Length: 115
Length: 116
Image 1 (cartoon, rainbow over the protein chains, first blue to last red):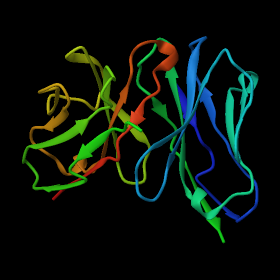
Image 2 (image 1 turned 180 degrees about the vertical axis):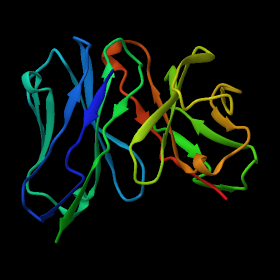
Image 3 (image 1 turned 60 degrees about the horizontal axis):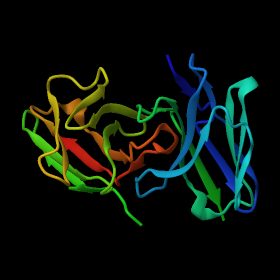
């Protein structure tokens, strides 16, 4: 069975600090997809990134970066120079690679960025 | 940019009543999903729908739930006889379904269901 663990329930940082959100996953599949979604206080789920299991290159998008390490089954998310607008709950999710399959979410990490 | 829309944003109902939650997926998407999030908890999969039939469903999706695509644009979730524990945020999502390499699910803003 698939499982996603986000051990950090809540994190508080001061604006401009860097912060890393941890995600560890379990799956028996050899190929799979990993995702991060952001849920701001308004409640919607905003897609941030999708990573295929066969592509272990790290990715950077502006202040966001993702570190995928298959050897440790981790897909961590770093926000550089955090801003108050980054305050949200961040969910890591996993799905099978056969396409259009259910997402298995972690419990989320609530990030509070203090001005 | 195309987006998933959901109505209503908030629904309050009495226990035992039927509710229908509505979603308009992204127009060229072929796969549709419902998820729910009980307050403060993680997002859980309910059901996926493709080609006018259920593709997959979770244990949560029991006989009290049903889904339908009544026309070319809407996708609905019906709860026949609501229970207090059905109170949650319900998210609709869609993906293009063209290939496994492009099946990112995009979520709507959610409907908050409160059962009294």
